[in-house]
Length: 331
Ligand code: G3H
Ligand code: 13P
Ligand code: ZN
Image (cartoon, rainbow, N blue to C red; front, side, top):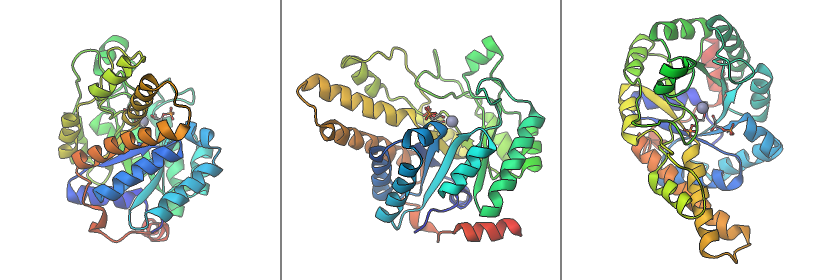
């Protein structure tokens, strides 16, 4: 089956009331682990690559890895998505590579730090939609900035998504999916004390804009057993804390359909490799540590597919092609 447009996968998740994990890839082992999990969980899957991943894989390797994933898993619905595209050039580049979905993150200025004004975000997102939809490619935008709510109080740099503004944003841009800022942040240090999310905003935005699919970034749960292994075997990750899986499930009940996870698979790989090196310093064949790291990533991804509820839903519907999506947008 060719790659499918993300809009279809998320619309089906909306119908079924479940969430679909979007897992970041940079290399073959990560992609193999994600695909094994999707196979075994019988789950549709969103595979995503950041700008860093495009650079790391030198594009051509990524394109071939995507092809390999499709060829090796012909019955799985796979979306290939650009994560945090920040300009129209990278959006076009991803489309040319064969991605079936792109994110234009207009929430920040090109420096990746300064929050961008609403009008400017609308403008760049609208232009990304104008580029992508004629190819049948799905577009995800972002409104609000990621970051912990406690930080919000201190630094006032974190802007939670305003439900009324979200409606305006969706109407003015035509995005298919919207990343909402509700107090999560990227990485392994999301909260200093107790995880706090503005989860009620999800419900409000979902009620006001029911046709846009809501996305939760920064959704790694930072399993404490992985942190303990990393710290036990020579790593240094004090006070790492993530979003509890139950909080994500609450978000899914209120309308979240795409859940971005990168840090958890990084932690799984690192904990495994550190343990192997610690226990057997004579190991030098990369297969002896990358193989077990791949197994550890697979376990995390499969567990997330089960908790987010996408497991068992791969065969619920017939796949759309980009041509089908193109015609639907034209209508
Ligand atoms: O949103 C961030 C993702 O975890 C990707 O991270 O830019 O280091 O590839 P990266
Ligand atoms: P984590 O760092 O919580 O895994 O978030 C990843 C993400 O949001 C990618 O866009
Ligand atoms: Zn993100």
